[in-house]
Length: 360
Image (cartoon, rainbow, N blue to C red; front, side, top):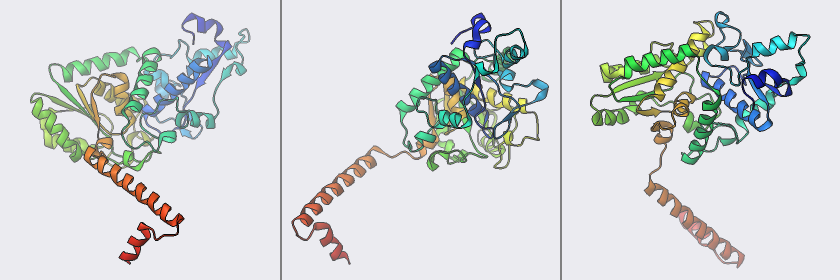
């Protein structure tokens, strides 16, 4: 892909419009759509331009706010390759410009779905789509996705200056002089994504407590930064850990409907800014306790050195001893099946049939 003035001069050789895949998704799902379409552009040699307007093919953009402009990507981030969609629109209506509508490429809706959920080369924040059956923790798989996402972010995705200033002011005011444990607790509509049931299970605060208690024991002066979409979860954390708990004053819900889904309440821009800053602050913590969710995973994309435990995976963990027992039980059963097959072949009473007759 090209950069800077090169794009301005010959972007007509391969512009690509990055669009929202589907509207009813959280902020970092939108960013994931961008990352995966950027990877597509790199493979195909297109120059990308992000266009997140007021509407997608299946609904309204949850973060659109006309007071901040027509392209929600531009609210928070710089152009990914030095050109905005406004630049493209100006060129398309200029009769003296060589850029034509046919020079602007885009994927169809079905192609976007495949790229996001069916292409193994894409970035996946947790196992869904083509990886839906990957239930047990696969550290190599997560590492590969994190490295790929981090590389794309470093190259193309850069915060607007006002957000950089706001982030640094929060870090200085809240974190300075302390070890900070980051907590991401996902409530509300978690469980509606197309992933394994175990990974979509809501992990309540009480299941975080043993891990938090241990960290506090080892770091008595630490603070605890909590990012959550559920009012009750923050209340429980404050009740148990008191003044240690840090949080931003952001939109949260008491119900199973996420704040971003409540389109008629509050500013779309503000909702996006809040979850973005929550995630960036998680990335600046010393340790992260998270669940299977894009917010916690993006904290690691922003800071690949951040140590973390994912409680969705942790809670379904199987001990080494149990794995060995399960393995040998399987082997024993396979041997018995082979023995049974041999006996049947030679017209003899099989061991399995004999056992069955004895128990009936």
